[in-house]
Picture 1 (cartoon, rainbow over the protein chains, first blue to last red):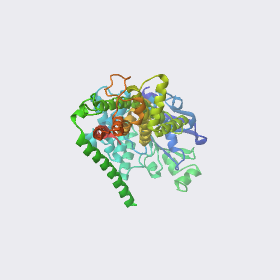
Picture 2 (spheres, rainbow over the protein chains, first blue to last red; picture 1 turned 90 degrees about the horizontal axis):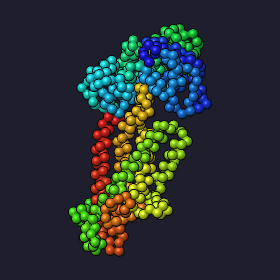
Picture 3 (tube, rainbow over the protein chains, first blue to last red; picture 1 turned 90 degrees about the vertical axis):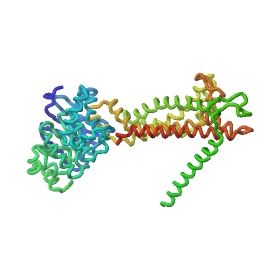
Picture 4 (cartoon, each protein chain N blue to C red; picture 1 turned 120 degrees about the horizontal axis):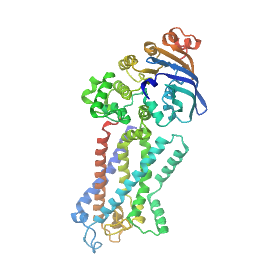
Length: 257
Length: 270
């Protein structure tokens, strides 16, 4: 599928159960393109589950079942299987909570996605891809002299940027970030935040966070989830500064967290 | 508390040093080139006619194929129960229980069981029998340690590769890379145990003064040779110590070599 096909992400009537417990209730959400959408809510409200459902990593959880639709350019992710699912996943990058470099060199980490999808024709092209994406996440200058050293030797902040570069290298349209800065020190968090703001020109970013300050700083669009239900969603300024619902107001005021 | 730990560590070291020292001092004193380069001659049981090359080669002929076969069997099993089956799954629970039980079965029971089967199908003690029983012995060890190693691999690796659009097979390759050093160590431990095991091969591989020329011929093995020389009415302690030395050196070479290889492979590991 070409890029124009994958233009928007819409969640429709999503219900999700793990064993007999309903984790997500009737989620309806439209994710605007080239914006940062922050999903906020208290711990255990289903934020991460929602994120993992968007690229079907949730399938690995025991006893999970779901209904509804998650549409990307008219294709329903929830109905995809086999090669379709793999292709869809390629379009949705993930930046995990804890950075997880693959057991390979720095170079190979970025090249991995291109290799498995055959995106690069030769070594020269591969070198370009690696340099491009490492530059895009601001890591190139720091690692260009040790591209063949193990990725695990980088600092946590650098590893997180490496993971981002690795996701970007398969040319996704969406980036999912699951509390991508929660394991990082303040300086590294700031770098990642700034990167997201820069990257939204090219990518649609969906971010789960329970740092409200962070959401306030960078979100364009926001969704507030409480006990598996979307309480309020819309423009970030409106949701955070002038919420319609009482529950949102209470959450923002820190009545519960 | 700390004292107890020190004493325990000290005790273990004393065991290791005593064993190694005894084997090396007595073995080095009695070993000769003849012993390790020749098969037994006609007067081997009364004089120094020949050596025990038959047992050295026999041990390797049993253990090397058994290692290869058991790796071929156990690696897919480990991948299947850790990657394809969910953790709470009934089949993987039963499989784990089964391997735990198999792991606990003493090698003499394997030997006796295999012997019964061999008698039933009319097979004689042979190299093949030894390989099969040694494989039985190694498979549960390898699966069990492979399973433990798989547990230490972070879930995030699966998530990372899947989210890049990797297939299950591609994900397996990455996981295999991460598991390789651990698996190498586990394999060495299993080889060490298997090559030193006398009970399993006693019934199944038999004994022979010649190096087997085919799978259906019986073969000598080092542990059994040691057992024989020590329990004879006229024992040959010198030979037993020399054979013990050879056995120990083989295991040491394997361990050091394996460490070296796995360190090279694990350069990039997390």
